[in-house]
Amino acid sequence: MSRWSAVLFGGLTAVAVAACSDQQPTGPAVAPNVPSYLLGDAARGWNPTFHWLPPMVTSQPLTGTFDPGRDPVVTICKRLQEGCGLQVASFSKAGGTDGSRIAVDTAGQAYKVTWRTDGASLPLLRDYEIYRVYVLLGGQVSGFADVELLATKTEEKAFPQQDSLIGLLKGKKLTIKFNLETRTQWFDLRIDNQGDGVFGLEAGGGAAIYNLSMQEDAIGDFRAVYTNSSGPVTAVFTGQRRFARTNPVLKMVYADDDYFAVWAGRQKADGSVEGAWADAAGQIGDFRIVDSGQAVSRSSAAGQRLVPSTYKAANAADLNGGWTFSFDRNYDGVYVPEPGATNPLAFTASNATDVSAGYTDGTTGRFEGSLLTARNTSVITLLFTNTDYYCAFAGSMISANEIVGVYYDAAGYAGDFRMTRNP
Image (tube, rainbow, N blue to C red; front, top):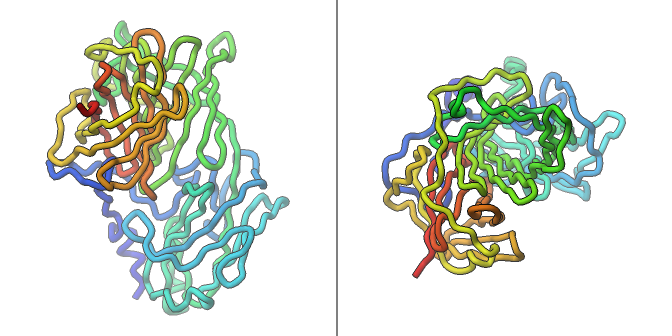
């Protein structure tokens, strides 16, 4: 009997417990309340520039500009929690399993490829298993869909058309069809000046609201122009939105003459983003990015909050060398370390602003980002990548040997972090 009903009612809703390294904390941590996706695209609050098309879904409104020049890769694997287990098929424009290759239908605004479940992948397939179809761009997840293999035509006929889990009779072909876009969208950026994990009100009343015109491509790289009543200004936000597991994360930088602000956040199921920021004036706070006109709930009056002290680095080379990274899983502006939530890492600067870091204890994954120096302090923004997992960081350098800040990750956690230079 098909297991699709069990899936819909929680059979595959376990949240992967992950933090910003492979070494998991042993201290207490409450799993966040996050969505469990069976299908990831714009209509499901995933990647706003990626759309599944029929027959993967029943219908799909397209809102951006079709981008036919991309070179996607489609992989199919046995679903393992929110990630990928045994790979059973792979396709690109150059070729793939059973000789199938990705084709571009410019007139139909679609990329498409055929997966034959009676072909080379058949010995690897099992009835009623869930297989995840990934669309990758530059190695990054752009969209995905879950497919359950059915054993009988009766089950195929009874399988609901739900635009979430896809039912496929084993032995049949599946036409994998999708659209990749570039798009420009208007957003409201709302901030407070209290870095405590609660989006509140500005001191003096009234939330600060700024208009953003965001241009985003199919891989999640974006550029947003900050606007006001006088029109666009020269300063812009640049950043990356990365899609993995159940929570896309966002990292961005705002630059305006001698001022910088760094941002780390996580996308919610309604497409909005919530997170934290730190700036070169020594302030930290919370933010939300929402579609223009979208209602936003607020709670708690918030006052201005400065980091304990500030430090102005000469450039990114000031980070070179060994550091100890540690974190907690309760973002409230107060760092409380958890047992086991500590890793050694080493920073390397590639130029005056860009830095990378890797763990030195054999733990996998990589930090990439920037150290930006202006006014009173230096701020740091990092994106940690580990196969299908991402974590975004925003922090301030409060001394030559210490960095403090906030992170949001793709497993649904947010917390405070601390980095200290090794003696």
